[in-house]
Length: 254
Image 1 (cartoon, helix red, strand yellow):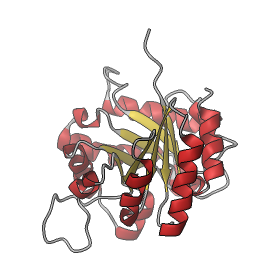
Image 2 (image 1 turned 60 degrees about the horizontal axis):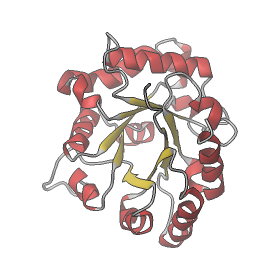
Image 3 (image 1 turned 45 degrees about the vertical axis):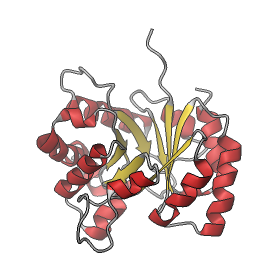
Image 4 (image 1 turned 90 degrees about the vertical axis):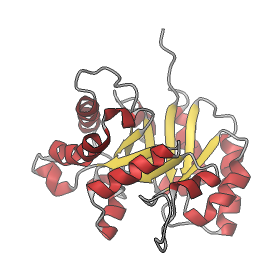
């Protein structure tokens, strides 16, 4: 009998936090979640606070990572942070392709693919965000949009690069809104993504898919019970230790 996989819970702090806030927040998460060994919990923090996450979470069941990375290993790239630098602080996971960055910095699919590959080269876990905007959903081209976001990585590096990686289906229209995508929409997209990477379904358990977009304590269980969903990616809820606890506590009972 196949062993039950741990549900994945990833918090994205975005550009929030401070030394004082983090000190209290990280210690609160450590206290509240220290016994939640049924889950794989990761908090993606702003670069300057990697040292703080490492100091407080080291030796616990809470992992830490970042929200972006340079596509180069090193060099004269002012303002960039390399995967090896994140690894120096024992970071385990890095988000790439988030729609907020794509919009603000016009990141291309090729650029995101190179970042994805660089994370893998440093033996960390890349979390690739994919998803459509509202106009694309209403036009019925959401699968084509998501396919283009994933196929660049497939074309450049092959399907094996997705082994041990995470894909977050995060419809842009659901981010920061009051409602998540429907279970039917999510399940259909998860199935589409797995078949895109593994057409014959062989090895389709090698990549994990999480859902992101208006995740909260009220809908976390329903989202995690959807066929094909291996966990959740949350934004604003990751900044509230009590909400984070409620979400994890409900999911661990599934």
